[in-house]
Length: 247
Image (cartoon, rainbow, N blue to C red; front, side, top):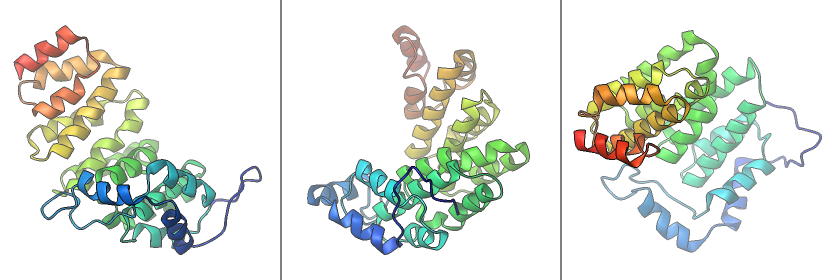
């Protein structure tokens, strides 16, 4: 997909090599903790997911070592039963996207969507959205209609993908999609959408406080409490308390 950099030591290998590398740095205490943290119990949003017990810094290190992994091996990682293999695969894919240009960037984006069944928890979505989907959508306005398609899908992870993908647009001082989706999600039932929406509104406020205050003045009384708390986190305390009292 992307040619090897002459200044970076990279390994050639397979998805199985990466799984073995992750197993070597797995920790039993994390293997016990992570399924609880990501709610993998029956009825939880991560129900059925499995963990080796690898912390994110170690996953990023492994991803850097295999940053030019071929597409067919990335597909295997994204289809793995192990959460850390899928996340490491997304780290590799995001790195390749950052180093790519058309048509490779489109192929990487389409690969992510093809394998989206494995992007099934918030940390995976929060890698795929701001690092792959958001930059690809931001390049052309005609592509951005996908955001509303995902938002209307009724599927939690696609809806979160839509919301967090607006981070790229926020960084370009384009706020329309963030506020449109935030308005649509005011009545969403899931806390993970409330958190993602509040996060993006806060990021918008970091760039343009007037845009955030305008949204709050129009919608604070309807916003779920978690969404509101996330969005006002960086505001002065008196202002925060005023909006919380409105809610």
